[in-house]
Image (cartoon, rainbow, N blue to C red; front, side, top):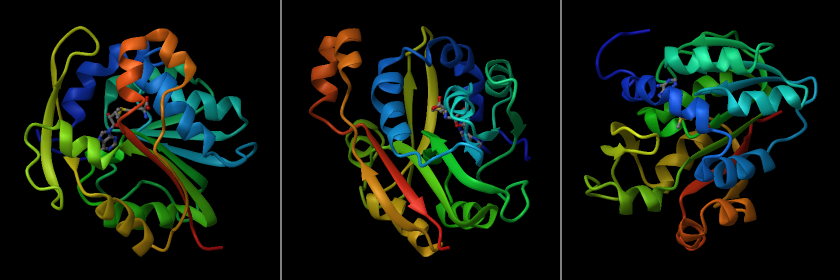
Length: 240
Ligand SMILES: C[S@@+](CC[C@H](N)C(=O)[O-])C[C@H]1O[C@@H](n2cnc3c(N)ncnc32)[C@H](O)[C@@H]1O
């Protein structure tokens, strides 16, 4: 995997964020009570299935998949994230790789792919979805979540043109220290078209709203999240 400062673009940020993610991933409201329940609600039966968790972070979703009987392989660019993931899910395999390039797996290696909040760090979605199609069995599925295109356009200060792919950045202070996190924002059409062009069918699409647990954890922020889109979750299916 290339070791240049900007490739993968968000790796450096996630090495810094890893300890916070590991510590708070089960209770951070935007993940635990908004995005993750919606993503999990899109999962097909996973018992006995081989599932790749792409951009697995500290392993919270991989842990859920393992609990649901899947044989899990987690992939991430961040060494720190992977160390936490290995501790959290000892029965899963984890490896370091870049979603921006060729994936280090054989054709038809997986029945399903999950990816929670990682694809918006990848520039080239045409090759990403072609690679995911290659490593999936016929009829295989992808369940993924990304930052919502409307929220990205409204909330990144450096977003200029909704219709363009743009490299943007925001300073996060969610875990106590400030970290600049770059990402690629793109319009909705540029999210779905590469998947459809790779042969996937769009099976389900969610714009999740916060759960009751979110309201209890942070009532003020709940009101904000309940009236604005923050994430987009979708399920894609490869041809049989
Ligand atoms: C917002 S975190 C989400 C982690 C985990 N999926 C979760 O929901 O808790 C994004 C993850 O994507 C990983 N990531 C970012 N760019 C990547 C790339 N090009 N290839 C592989 N992983 C990447 C980061 O290292 C980080 O662990």
